[in-house]
Image 1 (spheres, one colour):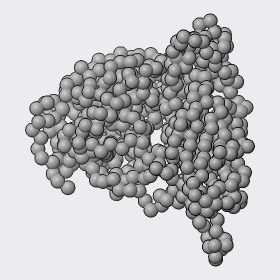
Image 2 (image 1 turned 45 degrees about the vertical axis):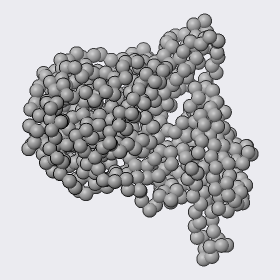
Image 3 (image 1 turned 90 degrees about the horizontal axis):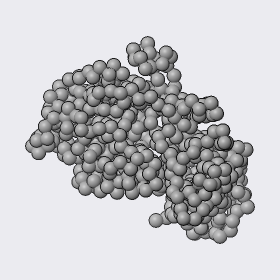
Length: 607
């Protein structure tokens, strides 16, 4: 399939043929063969685009290639949208472009500017018809580019503002006529981590027509091979043992955090289970970034394929935000919190005196393996610098490798967080390889995550906000459903790391506050002000302190299961999520209590 590159003629005067300006936009992520590069969509909510990145752990990756048709040959001016991701003073992300087997003179990715911008690459001769474009990585250290822009007019420099550029992208990519309609669904689940995957399966098995939308090529979120966090929390302490059965199906055992064996995280297992459900319409590589509203009701969501840029519209009766970031709720105008509440507001002894923007951080895990032959690793002057006095002497990462803590916004600065983590990983590894060769000469980096494993961002507010007291007092509300077992686990910067890298910490510590098994009320799983919005996962209705316990993935998966069952009750009774609590709570509780109900379900009303 040809990648998307649309030629657009803009009338500059009265006569088209004499005053026409020809423009071609090529999105990097839409290259036909991305080679060893990877597609990164983590900053879509900032850039409104994915991009290509050369994530080679210090070894140049295979070229990315594509063929682009030009309806008119001739001399064009070329701009490349890129950045220097580690300008200290210049970074390592160097790459070159080749057009029709001719390398351009300019080396990209070493400008010394950390912001995304368009760089003028000069004049290029393009043939009418097919032209080959090649992106050549020069370092393996995460060079990246967003798009290529060709114009016959040198004064036609592309706009750099992200929102304004979105309009240009839609025009030149032929998306201005609107998205393709996928269909109408009983339940649209946005986010394919453990919570979203369980919600989709649960709802589908109850007879709902479900769309599951995930913005990566795999399911599982933090438990996927892309991030590699093991599942925590217990499913064997439940008041309602039915919750957790789907989690067990998806559970691929405990490989620990950052295991170098990708297969241990069960990507294919999760995909097979979902694809076996006839009521689930699965849409991978699709990032939801817009909604259609009717008052306080979500009518549809709009997603864009992170590679092809094709847009899709999903219409639904009920929606579940399982994105972790609360993306769908935010787009719909749901009430949310982000950061820490004050002690006077919540009455929690573990809350700070004053509210702030502090959030738990994001991890990029990594691992090395011992090889038969010794290997080297480059010096990394652009990375975080380590010394005999302070370095992290280990062959792999665990949960402590974490950046955030209020120093970075975990949503809008996700790229900067990931890049800070990479500077720590590569800097520390370079130190170990070059200064502790007697121990690490035969070790080689086997895997480094380029997708960040987030812990905390937005929390969407429901009719009940779970608190520290709810947890520690073991309050059993009438709608108590999901049983949670994890400690109150609130991370903070490691003291020694702060001593050496104050304000730029990348290593965490914690103090576990033990709890007895407690129940999360159903009212924490739907929005207080968006009439048809559920949520499951780390974005449910809690305080920051309570979130420290509810956020682990087996617990999040059970939330998803509960949402699927609740959506069934809502659909069956033509009710809102709130009305399930007010009018049909016994029916919902009966379903999660009794495994027999699943075999004798009433017929759903037809649309």
